[in-house]
Amino acid sequence: MKFNEVIGQEEVHERLVQMVKEDRLPHALMLCGPAGSGKLALAVAFGCYLLSPKETELQEESPMLRKLEHPDLHFTYPTIKLPSMGTDHKPVSNDFAREWHELMMQGPYFTLNQWLTAIGAENQQAIITAGESDELVRKLSLKSSQGGYKVSIIWLPERMNIECANKLLKLIEEPPTQTVFLMVCQEPDKLLETIRSRVQRIDVKKLPDETIRQALIEKRGIDEESARRVSRMANGSWMKALEALQAGSENQQFLDLFILLMRLAYQRNVKELRKWSETLATFGREKQKRFLEFFLRMIRENFMHNFQQSDLCYMTQEEENFARNFARFINEGNVLQFYDLTNRGIRDIGQNANAKIVFFDFALQVIILLIQK
Image 1 (cartoon, helix red, strand yellow):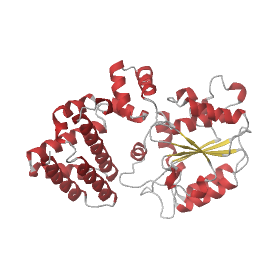
Image 2: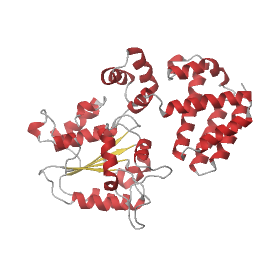
Image 3: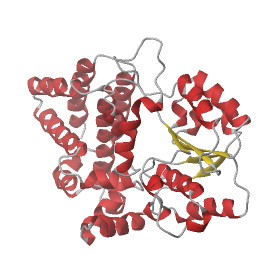
Image 4: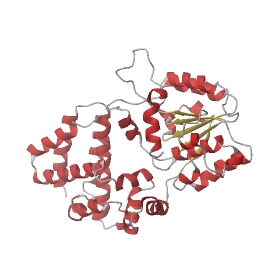
């Protein structure tokens, strides 16, 4: 993968390359930033850059790097324990190498939820186990196959368990010769302070709307108006922009559920609201939380629409069509209560509360809040 495949982020690109040219590349870097900003894409492109023979940098990329199959390029990512695994087995990245490679070949812009779906995680929480740190020690102790760098890309290191984090800390403190660690982190505050203090942090900012707009036109071939609307709604995330383009996407399902909830709540149709809550209860917990986060966004967008703040609204055409008649129900009298209600729902689902009860109570509370219009 080359840097020209990364959406925007030219400033970070130049900074990384300059470190190499000035011979001041640290052995451990951590790219931090919001989802969809391109942290993983930058890490992969930089890893390939480090592994490319300098005399061929401007030439055709080697097949091994293009397919991300270079023997000195190592990936670490959160995994789960499958039923087929033995009781003593600690899952490692190699157990899911095929799924990871397939997802990466589609492009290094994907969410943790997409990764969990790819490995069949359902309700499991993916982590990086102590077995992974042992595997890294083994891999990185080998001599470089090409006589140059060995690159270890660690995606979401904040998902390491404490045993793995402590072992990785020791590996970073005493790195193997010519090894570069590239951490791709979304929530750095969840990492051990001792690890954070031993890596050089580079913050990756949200993508500008104009960068996303141009990329949508050039890479996806959509028209100017659609690109403008999608880029605003993406809020700096290339992944959100891609999701908005997918017909029948999860966001469409969530919008339909949001509209149905509001219509049934307005009608005070308790019987149908119970069916609505049972539908939500069939989702996995991660998907339930994503719906509630989508619900929060819709409340925010309709509140802004109600006060005619068009410059601050970030909605698809279909979302805006519904907001024209619905937004008046979201106002200063209930918007904070909607936020509190939704955040309680996210907390309860995260604590494994009974989903049917949580969502039925949620739906009944929406009736009360709509009355306050």
